[in-house]
Length: 232
Image 1: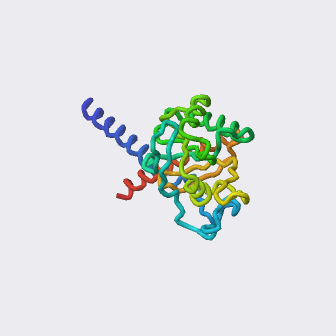
Image 2 (image 1 turned 45 degrees about the horizontal axis):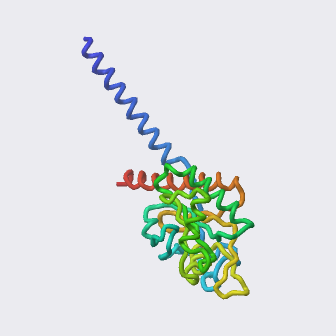
Image 3 (image 1 turned 90 degrees about the vertical axis):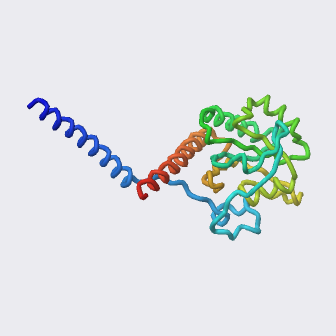
């Protein structure tokens, strides 16, 4: 008799566990999923976008590039495969918004140091001055973690195109065909190289929003994996 009741007690526990799992699955399916927008050139302030792509309404992604970081290493899109990253534009001798932006990027670096899925990428808008050696001096001064954060320089035209045609984050300098008026924008890029957010890099509170949105992107990926397995 005792064995009979033990058997049914065990079955009861199994049914309770299965019920809990079923309820959790149903809750996950029905719970609204927070999703970040996917930014297209046509939906971004036209001042930040090269005229050649201002009409584009879909399929915009950050294209390939080849730049040199503070350690003299070539950095390409391959270094960001399967990564989320935050990009911005600066120059080392800037005395206005750049120091604030760099401090806030360092804050992100410290908050994300244990998150292997996220990287940081800062492009100089004065490549003719900001050599890898100068970027290295700046990186040491600012506490840059080389494994997390790349400061890059390179061909002026390539950096111009990245700022205006890829990241949609800098204004044109009327006095210089390849000159840029860089802005305070931090740009959040997902694993598919799509732009998912713009933030004011001079506002500390916006760093909390960046971190929150990174969490949303990472959970978005987990949700996609879950629904794929569930559908299968």
